[in-house]
Length: 228
Image 1 (cartoon, helix red, strand yellow):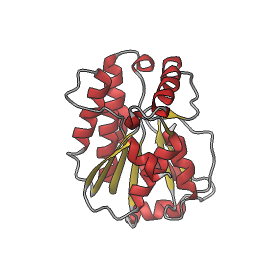
Image 2 (cartoon, helix red, strand yellow; image 1 turned 90 degrees about the vertical axis):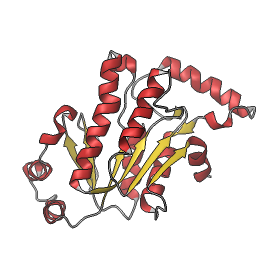
Image 3 (cartoon, rainbow, N blue to C red; image 1 turned 60 degrees about the horizontal axis):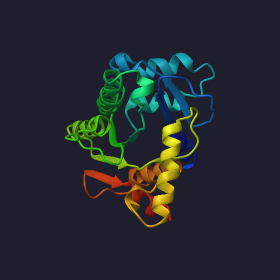
């Protein structure tokens, strides 16, 4: 959800000349700024970015991007919205591999490529010492990301996400209805549901601004306030 919104907003932003999507599957969308990299996250270190772009560049459209990658004359920001559910992953072990291992490997990989800023979609309640498995894994990711020396690390902790999903999550949909009702009464405001485009907007805002501190944790409430 957030990844799709990020792409659309990055396409429109005048500070980004190229948008490289890195994912497990090809996207159906097309845009003059967009270049896609379909990767196996278990073998990310073997990906030769320049070679892949050159191989797919039949009309020479990627030459400006290939040139700046070769000459390392670029500023790169990395955005990460990678995640799954235990149900989709099939087990806690697979969930940990996707939500933790793949995220950390991606962060290390883009840091080696020269990314100066890393902006990550975590979750409200993330806590490495939590007794709740989901929150614990998200918290572990946050702590491990802090060990990678980016110039800036932005950790975004949205509450329940509103927006359009390709798949239907019945339990999550019920939770949205309940939380909307509760927050409408003024209770538990920090858990107010947030739209995917609001998270994306907040991530880009923190990416392009001058960051005064190297690591920030941005709450769901702060993201909502930023969108007013």
